[in-house]
Length: 438
Image 1 (cartoon, one colour):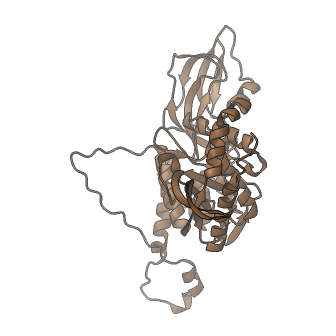
Image 2 (cartoon, rainbow, N blue to C red; image 1 turned 120 degrees about the vertical axis):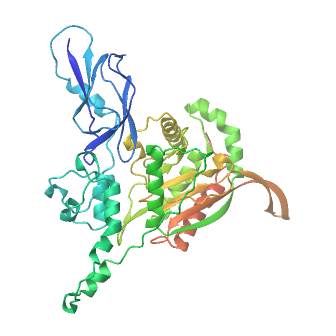
Image 3 (spheres, rainbow, N blue to C red; image 1 turned 180 degrees about the vertical axis):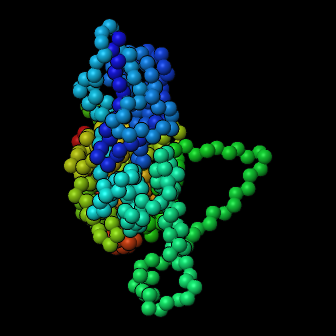
């Protein structure tokens, strides 16, 4: 009976390994083509790997939590029918690899440092941290790793960075003034270690280990607050025209295009237009350099059934009409909730929208999704008494109102830029044509 090897799929040039987080099959199980075999994880996303063939699981070569290099076999499937040993067909191999789109190269970008000079393997995340902290190849090679095969993990390099300043400041028995370099001392200031407060636990408390995604979110949020000085601006928007238009046209929109029209595509449309008007917000910071993004890729924060959060990205949102935006928003939201997003679906975002209004919250102050420089929080839409200007004077009427809040990176976005951008989003929403055709 011929067999087929399931290989760890290729996930982009910067990704050289992945961790097996879950097996959905056992040895002896019969499977059909496209049945999900296992779940793998990189530093960015979890992905399910389907089988390109039908058959029976003959052997599982790596257990859960194993770190496997790209291209290495993870399982062997006995194919149906008789015959000799066969090599995997190229088309079948490509089918596995196509289940995961290429990871964004910036997740492993390491500037001009050439890590090929080292004979050790380092993950893209470790390389990125080394580049940001100015750690040389020789210095990185000297770090003792705690991972599988003595690999240097993120924790290892962060601990090293935390203690690096103290190691350099070991006092000499007899100070030698001629060896002191003031510029060098200024270039390596002592880093303050933040002590976590002690946490008491009683017998009635329940202790639950964070899952992998929650750990990634926690680390990313802490990093963002450490990297970017956050400032938040707030405006109140009159959403009456949009609410009335949607209530009138949502059934016709779905009948015509086969897509539900929520408020999110409308927010995305306004944000994309405003980002074109204010390119300084569609940017990233790299040291003392500002990178102005050519593409307008808007991330949409999606709450998962597990309680975690993920941000799929609407690529080139400025080039799509409302129908295209609605289709993209519905697609990525459904894929997110089914845990079927590919790495490409969550890569390349240049700005993020977080909808606090989904939980009936009126205002939020979200944390910036690095390496972006701003994030928009959308509050709930509520009916409020409001002053309305008319040709015959001011009157009090009921309007649909909503708060928008923008958190932005004060390193490059000042109040004038952030406030002007936020006001522009509000202007686009309030100018929405109530007679707009479906």
